[in-house]
Image 1 (tube, rainbow, N blue to C red):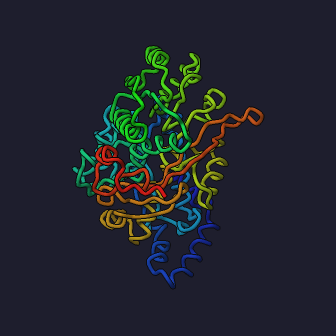
Image 2: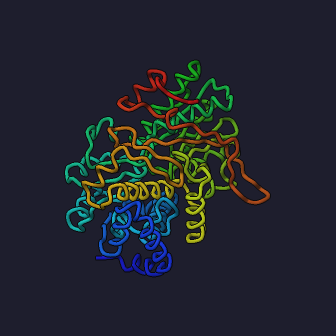
Image 3: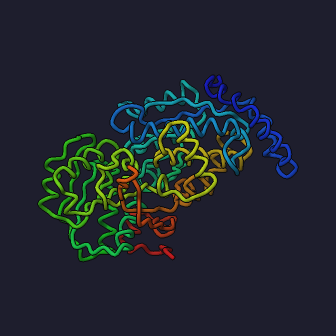
Length: 442
């Protein structure tokens, strides 16, 4: 059954769709597949399960922005109003019918099974938490259901858990590129680092992020020493003892892959005790909080966005469209979870347009090794036998514009995907330990 809300939006774009159909007809002389897709876009539906945090501490900074982006991009795909090269309405000849599910659940695998076996979805796009992805990837392979992991970062998904994937893809980058990029940023900015500390959540995401950051520091700043390693539980919310340890250790740099409410609580509590006046804070996922915290985010904080997303996205017609459409609809700028959801859905559309079909086997074949353009730039499914994406990454330094009341980034540096990701066939930890062999940073 079609989604009435999306159909309403679809009919609201009748003129644009007509234009898109006429355009497709013209293009059809050169692309029979493209015109065929458009002709059937109103006749078929493609059920997609969208899983993201809709409740809990991660909903506000992560889950809801991702859901908002999904709604916006799906409606635009259905109506044919996404800029080129995505202007042909529909996806492989079908209109998307989304079903939204809350990732904040204690029965994630059961929720996934319900989507597949009861709701009859033909694809699942979702999952922010690395713990969720580690649980769902084997489930997707077992149930033989195409599943796009759009955000989680642990390298374990394809390096240890599902080493020969067929149905599972990840359209966002590894945590490895966040950590390697962070160290390269410190080096690029000429920072003299003699000591550093880690503040990361105690599960796969936090542990892997710290492993890769400390490993990269050992390669680039080999005389620097670790003065503190903190791994509090997820969603603890109180960091008195951890902040005390950081004050005692007085590291030059504090690395943190904290995200969601945990990150915001840590920033506020650490600022209150002046820890960031003594140590440079480096937040690999900090972009999601910079607008929310505004004046509460310390100037000089190094901010990452897990790619070239949000404030770090390159200028392009597609990015301009996405930012304006998102702001006009939701009254806020899109942050990186929004970008990564848009990236995933446009990747699926690019695969469907390439295959000329929304059939699962055809989509899987087209998705494998795919390259496409998103609002954040070029994405390549270059790792894990064509199932894991790589892309550029950028970092910047936070500066609050008091006069205009705006959160800004200065000293932005971009690193190529080939500079911060391991080559195909090499595990991330081995690549770092081997001194980034094969990295192309020119």
